[in-house]
Image (cartoon, rainbow, N blue to C red; front, side, top):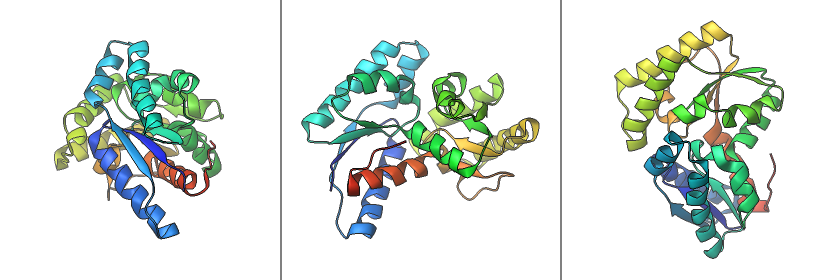
Length: 233
């Protein structure tokens, strides 16, 4: 097997999910547990860098973690949060390890599914920025996002509840109402859950269109790397 390094803590709930799912899926396929190493950083520092538009600081913070993964023997690394992908190109250029992009593998899955227009949900930096959209748009897929007020609501719920593992029914209904309204207004063919904590809020909930869960698509690719060393987008 190939040893995978995870930049975790961005946020903690999704890091737990990555560890649990990777160990279970690899064991199901191989009968053995995967070699993993996790460098746990802080989602709050990531969001602070984003709020200040300090991409250089964010990249340096994440790169320190990747260097630690390399010293721990990882053969490739990945980010377990989407927001840090805003500096993915910088990281890839400076990283001592090959990096597996959550956004690239998700965009490839969207192409395979035949989508041409998607609604993107995520943290404020993910929805307001261009880095997440670019991965889909360069493949010919249009990406739409909620209104600024709706983005502020979604970001607040992610930062104050979902990042802490808190799932309130009232908050779930707010997220669902925003999503349904935007699907109706934009004609989006699917909803991209562009934050690795969002599946916590959407689990078991009905939407008028399919959901593209970037975490699940990412996990599939990471299992392929662990078992066969496969890296592709």
